[in-house]
Length: 428
Image: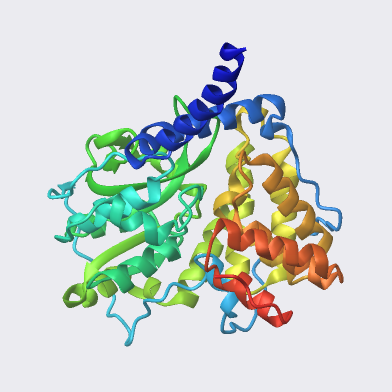
């Protein structure tokens, strides 16, 4: 009897003690990612996400073959959910050099403090590394709370990095799309490391995912870039062709950080790319050309990029058709190569389908995305599903999604705004 009583008291106390110990910061930091990884492995083993295929119900598959002539409008506030309108814009026209000085055959920038990322902390770690080049004294422990109010968040958008730089430091940042190798070399040779967003695959990961790297060198003879990689290590060598293939997955997005006194030099390197509309059209042309020459998964990325660039240009009908083509191609990609995490990072299809009235496609895509993740913590997917539900008159389900959005990302302003439009004051 005494033994039974002892066990009835000891077991709950032991469980409580284990919970308390696990949540101690030093213990939690070391063990939490292993627990989350195990949970993800179990879920993905039971329901392999790479087997899920989103099929648009309202797809016309009438894919535009050329860019239409459109008027460029001012983006709405909700477009800030993605890197739709970089905030650094030239105040006067740069003076492109008609006969540019040839780039040196190699260059290497030193002074970057390499930092290995904590679990799911690629964005904060890489931003800290890029800032360290300019003398910023901090680490991912400083950048992460701003970039990821919820440490379970799976992604950091480029616009969030730009916001950190301009709100929390005395530096500036420019986000652009449609980059190329020569532009990266021009920045590095001029003394500017460049943050790039790209695809990533490797040991210890379940398939394709998004990743950041800091480019700080190149060597034309060897045909490779030198990058700081928060997962693999410092001064990694990446062949040019491999770099392009991985970079394509994120529309050739790049971020340049610089002190205000060097702003004019950045504008000179960018040339006409300093202008948002020119940059968007430039990236759209690249994606259109690539849809004509690529195959397999690269073709999927090309069509996806085309959709994203047409969203930037507010041609939502053209964007929706391009995304339809991307998703039609997705099912042809071998399962092991499918980028099933794509909507974690790039939410352009929600814009395209929502603004063409394809609300059920928004709902289905968001649901597919949320069900595939081990923890449904994608605030953008909750937000867009709520918007579509509201458009279809299902206010109750929409309110549930908006509250879920704020659970996973406290203070997320688009969800707060939607609740207030419904006469509901969110708990902040």
